[in-house]
Length: 125
Image (cartoon, rainbow, N blue to C red; front, side, top):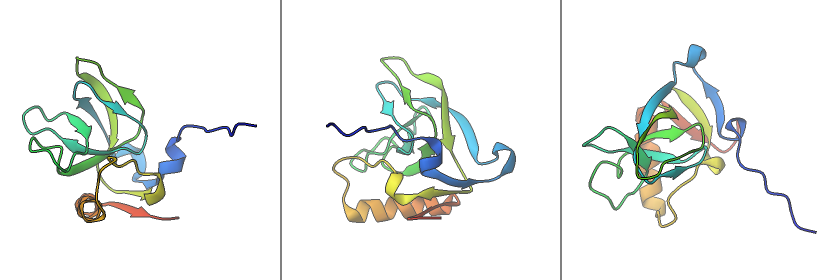
């Protein structure tokens, strides 16, 4: 029998956020992105759009900025309806979605950058 695999839900990633959606922001999403709940994000310097974290880049996505709260896919066109955790939150570290080639050192830097925003990751709440 095949195992049933369910996609992540917001409650799998987000343990706490500030009241009245203070922790959230609606943002632009860069073209050609497939982002699932919990994806660690960077912000492109030229456009201020979010994109998946890419530690090897030099256009802004190499610096951790947010975590995506709603699955979103873009094609060649950007979208303006991305929902992110931008500040003051507690997230499940095991549910964060990282780039495939990220090293432990790069992940530690990204976690520290999230903590500056008040986004703390823990194994369990």
